[in-house]
Every structure is written in C-alpha cells, then in structure tokens.
Length: 360
Ligand SMILES: NC(=O)c1ccc[n+]([C@@H]2O[C@H](COP(=O)([O-])OP(=O)(O)OC[C@H]3O[C@@H](n4cnc5c(N)ncnc54)[C@H](OP(=O)(O)O)[C@@H]3O)[C@@H](O)[C@H]2O)c1
Image (cartoon, rainbow, N blue to C red; front, side, top):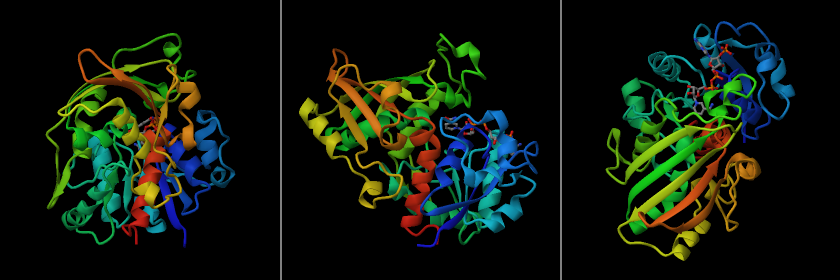
C-alpha cells in the first residue's frame, strides 16, 4: 500500500507534538509538512518546539529538520503538497472553522482535534469503535463545500473518551436512560505541564471552561444517526457532568453512575465489555487496541499512572463496577487524553477513513 503524505497544522503544540510522534513512523502515513503560527514559520521543527517538547519520548529524528510553515499564510502550498492534514491549532473558534474549511475547499481532507466544527451538522464526529457509520454524511458535506475530495472529520472531546466507550455496548440492549459523571482531568488537557503550570502542583481546580457542556452533549451526537444531509442528535440518555482539573500529567479518569430501563446483571455488563469490538478491531487498523475495554477486578485499579498507557494509550481501562443506592450501577474509567483522547484518536480516525476509501 502506497503511503499517504500528511501534514500537521498546529504541530508545535501539546497535541501537535503527539501527532508528530505518532506519524513520524506510521506504516500508512508519511509526515511531510508541519505548520504552526507565523512565530514558528521558517524554523526547523526542533528549533520551533525548543524546550516546549513535552513528551516522555524524544523528538523524532524524522521530524527534527522539517521546516515549519505558517498554517494560514502557506495554506495553498501545504494543501497542494499533502493528501490530508491533521489539525491541532489553538486559535479563536471562528478562525479555526474558517481555516479548516479553507483546507477542505482546497481538496485537502482535514482530521481535526478541535471543537470548532463538532456541531457543524454535516461534519462527522467519530470515535471509530462507536459510530463509524457517521462517515456516510461526508458526501453531503462535500456537496455543500463544492469539493470532490476535501472534507472535515472531527474527533470528540477528550473528557468523554473514557466513559462513552464503557456505556456504548450497554446503551441499546439495556436502555441506558440516566448518567451522572465526574471527570478528573490531567493538566496536559490544557496544553500544560507542571513546569508551565506550577499552580497545579498539590492542587485541584473545580472548573474547566466549557468541559461540562461538552461532556453532557457530545455523546448525544456520537449516538445520533445520519439523516440525509446531517447527523440527527440522539435524545437520550440524560447526562449530567462535573469536570475537575487534577494534578496528573496525562490521563483523564471518570467516576460514572448509570441507570437502565432493563437493569442488567453485573455479569452481563462485564460480558458486554469483554466482547466489545468495533470496526477498527475488525479491520485491524494499525493504531487500534486489540482489546478496546480492559476491565480490572482489583478494587484499586485503574490507576492513572499505571494504566493510562495500556495498548499504546489507545485502550480504555474500567474498574470498580458495583451496584449503587441511587443509580443502578457505578464504576470508574480511564483513558489517555492526548493519545486516545486527542492525537491517537485522530490518527485512528484517519486510518479508518483510509481503510474505507474516503481518502482515495
Ligand atoms: N491538550 C489536549 O489534551 C487536548 C485534547 C483535546 C482537544 N484539544 C484542543 O486541541 C487544540 C490544540 O491544543 P494544544 O493543547 O495542543 O494547544 P497548544 O499546546 O497551545 O498548541 C497550539 C498550536 O496552535 C498553533 N497556533 C496558535 N496560534 C496560531 C495561529 N494564529 N495560526 C496558526 N497556528 C497557531 C501553535 O503554534 P506556535 O507554536 O507557533 O504558537 C501550536 O502549534 C486546542 O483547540 C485544544 O482545545 C486539546
């Protein structure tokens, strides 16, 4: 299979660095362009990132000497040079909307980590194991944009990446109707490290702007369906969320409470989690975890530090399933926010798009 040439716009930031490290040695994609703001343009990637490199692995050799361009000023050149771009820019919402749409109109598909287009009705927001069929809305989007090849596909917010996978295999069969979730989110989710955010050492901040709304509403788009030229949003379950910033470098944890129309047994829930295999597993996509949901029987697991990197940070860890006095059940989930929750989820989505012919 011929490798596709790919670019990362916003490649110098926290999520962009993850994209670069995942793409530097990818079997299907060849990283040939990195773009960021005008501040970084003209420098090599190593110079532009400098001391901001925040990953535990070294800056990849294959990316070091790529000359960073401007995601805005050099757009036409970048779009002409690659087969698709991954977007991880941090700009105003309307600027990101316009930028991503401009790349798509230049016939360069955009796989975005940003929230800007998540509620555009004909933009699929996809977790590949959960709603791969939403990609069928792409022809309607192409018609609106007037493109043959270009389109935008997005991934959902990192906060819900731990608990929506655990709820999904139970939802239809048992009639999931009510969810309460509290998330405990790592500082890399704000693009920060303990060096750049020392106030987070020995601290918890009980507010993450916009996160509770995303945690409550985005699952309903994931659980929606393609209806002609748009995604129709699901009407249930009712979800309420509180999102806290906690002093962890990486890994978002969630404490979940849920109720059903037909209450399953604990054994039935565990069996659904063990058997949950989505299209990425069936297609054996390069970034897909072999087992999407790992259940830990030990009552002190999952732990952020021990379990966030499971299956390359692409699996979801679950534990502490037990009955609750107010809801039917409660349990705890964990996922890596910049791998499965951001860049890894974006790369997996691109692999699905390629495997299903959307990037031809
Ligand atoms: N961190 C996470 O876990 C996470 C998870 C989900 C979603 N997100 C979203 O992903 C996006 C990136 O997050 P991040 O944490 O990686 O942010 P970040 O570390 O602040 O990086 C921002 C990136 O955007 C570039 N940029 C800023 N202004 C620009 C402009 N005017 N034109 C072109 N490029 C510009 C920066 O380039 P320079 O280096 O040149 O300034 C940098 O590459 C944000 O929208 C964020 O909300 C983050």
